[in-house]
Image: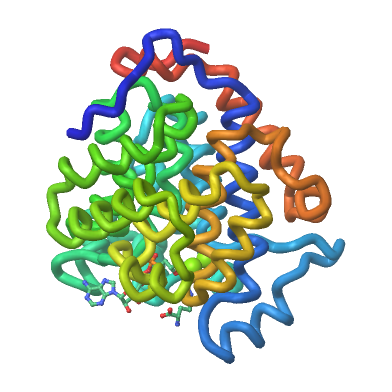
Length: 321
Ligand code: F2R
Ligand code: MG
Ligand code: MG
């Protein structure tokens, strides 16, 4: 386990929860028109706005909302409940990964998540679908590293049993926790590199830490070549972390523009990076205009308020309301 410092007096505030949740949804919705190939972009032109003209978000936000609603209903990561919610919410128009859509279809038809999650790939999916829903768990369990790792792993394995998917989710959640707690992010990445269980993450985190310590601007093509921009967790989690940390002192839209320039899995990289940036700066720092046209803003605000009302630090014996 990576020792993210956990100041005893850290308390999750509404502003931090809003920053993480809305930062993720905004990154997702702004990135979605840029994701995938020609066909996916054409489809998004048709389904990318609600009837009210709001910017729709994709599977990244939908699965995060499933995690939040399940947490609120059960007080912890309850895998059967979460699997049912993931399966019920899944809809083609949210752009789920092909393997994830099949896994969730099986669960909907009555298969257990334990069986379904290994039905498409026997060793489990190594896509970034577990990492994209992990940031909010990082915030909720920020000051309890053990509960954080347990919650993220339990959420991940429902659809993504592959070790690369789980470690990617842990890296993103721990980084969101570190951002929320105001820790020094370059040092956090160095610790993460030293503690990473899997070699591809160790290598990428080390590259990111070196770039940050040199304090120079790295061309976006170099970021793409060395950290990746793909749908696999290993090609997107460290990328999102690096983009967020290297642009932590810039406006949110600068971060989003970098994700668009990077290309590839833009909605997910922008969502994960947006959640980390938002957890650091809080919801009040997010740009007003795109936020005003975000799909289901009221629901996101209500869920953020409900989460922030609970003291999750006593997760071992159940959170206090
Ligand atoms: N689905 C999309 N975008 C559609 C366009 C993607 C584009 N064509 C591209 O490939 O870049 N976006 C959403 O999906 C991502 C999250 O995906 P998730 O939930 O991880 O899905 P899945 O299907 O489990 O994994 C993704 C793909 O990775 C490959 N893969 C995974 N595990 C594998 C394994 N064990 N062996 C071989 N291949 C494996 C497969 O190609 C999977 O389809 C997010 O971007 C979200 O926005
Ligand atoms: Mg998506
Ligand atoms: Mg994506």
